[in-house]
Length: 247
Image (cartoon, rainbow, N blue to C red; front, side):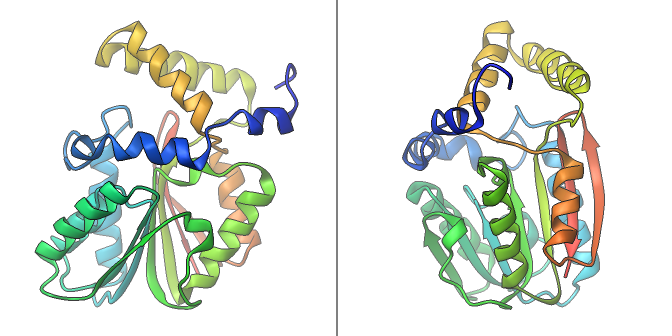
């Protein structure tokens, strides 16, 4: 980022209102477990892997927080394995929350489903309230290092001892040449194959405008720094990875 200051770079990013508006208008696409996120590598594979891992680690799971839940795909998939669960759904988009609540309640055997609209960084929920936090395709919206650190600390605080956070997200490479190869070239080829080069450029443009991802190593180190005692990588394919941290 030699040509532009970090402060100016961050101020040119999408606002929360702009992000909210984009997702308000894309509910139906994100409601499909199989095809809802075609731009995300191995989306269905990682959803199944994370859900199966949660079930293996918490066969008697009780309390789940799903931040940036979108249309509720991960909670829906989890409820196909364990039900009922006390679930809190959080998202910026009210239409997304409405769809997620409808789908989750249909599977959750009349168990409590709470929805919270707004910025997940200021969730009005008590500390040590959850066994599991699910954070998929949401953390890349964080901005500077202070934002990442305070958010990871907050999420650590919301978990009970023995609880865990499960993340699947866009990541960067720490090395500029590797970032150019893995993101621009290889991921670009994947996007072009989905549709065409114009579609690739469209996706790259909204990522540049909206997102501020960090490297996998940065995030794993930060998770330990804020107090998680154990971190593990579940899967990585180019610029997407799934990973977990235990409190």
